[in-house]
Image (cartoon, rainbow, N blue to C red; front, side, top):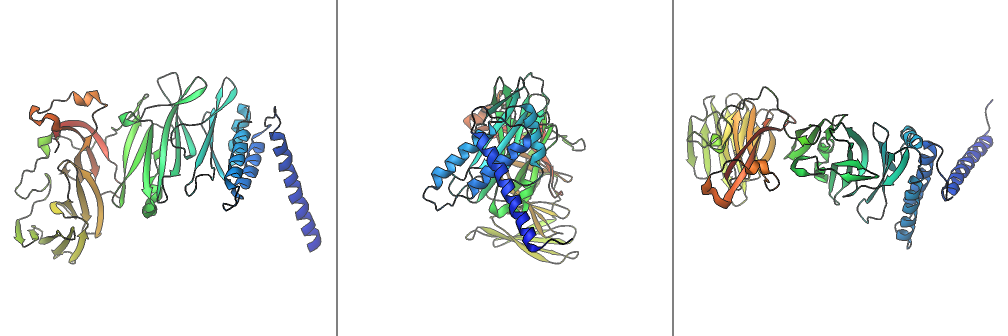
Length: 446
């Protein structure tokens, strides 16, 4: 039997009234002194009502700030009404049924959960608030994380050698009107609280990956890739228009940079002099060398044995470089580099350029002639080519690393000595993995 439009409208109205009354009953109970939730769905429903109320406050309302602060206080008190591990565990089940104006994450062992939401009191920026609930002796203890808050969506539990469990909190946030970030924070559970844990390289408890609104084309690539047990993290970095990843493995206490592929040849590369060019063209060691180099005005002309001619013209006023390529095997092409650059290498279809900078911090620029694309740009101190790999040296901060400072150094360097880590990456990969070779040397810094 078909229902009349009147009956349909009446049925829908009664349903709305029923839902409204149900939410109002829960909300009224919240303010009772000894109230606690019976199940996770009640928590989710209550927060949905409060977050909807928060989002409905008009920003041009004269009492906006006062109203927003009051609703946020009610949100905090609501979350702190979760009193049992059973309810905490049930929240995650109800949370995934539909979208919400807040995020919730829970650890695999169901002992720790975190709520995040935008308080709307950050003026033009998102202002996240976090509340953590964790289980201690079958009781739920509410607390908050220190440092810059974020919208957390994952919690990883690490297997450690110590007696206190370690947790990784993964989330994202907005740094400014134009800049965003992903972050990973490390905490350990001590007594009835959470403390920052300095388990990341350089004795850090937090890592962040920043990107701007101009980089939204590869925004998803700027997120951390984390194994489910937290044993491996791939940290993203933007090298020009390419995103690379640095792997870090957990050793039971801290994260190490070393995660080296066995096929990489590291022989004869361990100190500063191994990077010194051994040819008259000032090309990187391991590069294909030109047959000749001539100069006409501001243009350097290189000819290679595969009938390839490369012309490099510097424009010092505009601070850029025009590169023209002529060959019998490919169509001639011309491209520009946004720097005064020099050709310092060639390997098959790849060209390598050095840009302007200090001797310990200059940009390496890589161009692919076949795809006619700029591959990447990365500041470094030294570089050489090993087959399809670039080995490069990067200046590091040795102030907090006693092991590095014990490395022998030339006494003539005096206060201008610096310590350099050696890394490697495959330059022919779309998103290369940058790996620490576990080699460090002491060199001269200008």
